[in-house]
Length: 72
Image (cartoon, rainbow, N blue to C red; front, side, top):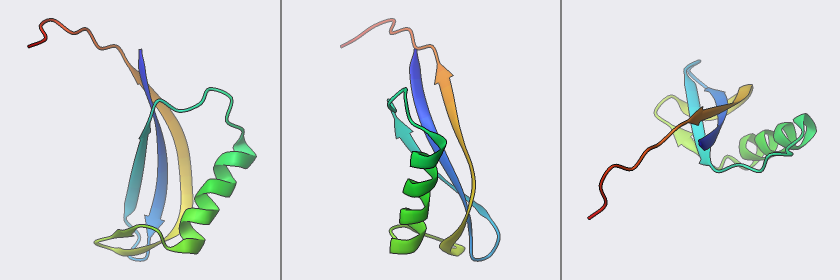
């Protein structure tokens, strides 16, 4: 099972901006996630077409099952 952590922000224009992080640690706490998102906003690390990221919206983890059928 492949998992991805999605950090979802709102940008200056009000649109959502998602950062996808593959293979996240399983034991991340709400406080750690909030602090990481605060740092992304404070340091203005990412820019979107709607301007800088200005607000945390949510964090979610997605999982999907991948079956490799052929590898060349």
